[in-house]
Image 1 (cartoon, helix red, strand yellow):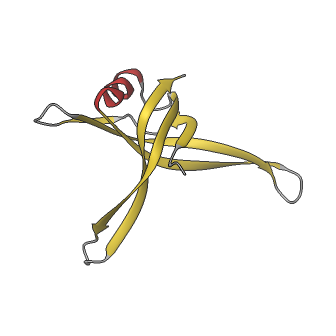
Image 2 (cartoon, rainbow, N blue to C red):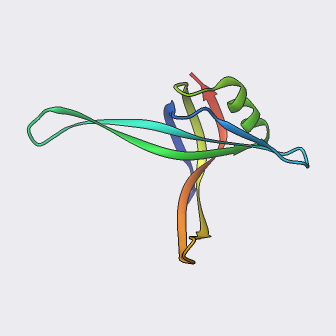
Length: 105
């Protein structure tokens, strides 16, 4: 089994890059993908899905330099689930996509 995601969509916010003291780079952004289908009445519908993504190193630099809000981007990556505690102390989980390859279209 392999954890791999491939998406083509439009960037929803300008990528936000973080430069760390050790020289590492990380970029965060959202990607919108659309799915078209026919409803029960036969009318064409479109549904938009929003995905949270991030990338490290050279991939992060590429995305930050070549992309902005609205750019169509093809990515390959993997699903990653992280945990955090809410202000009330409850455990929360969220899933995002760690991008390892990206191409602006």
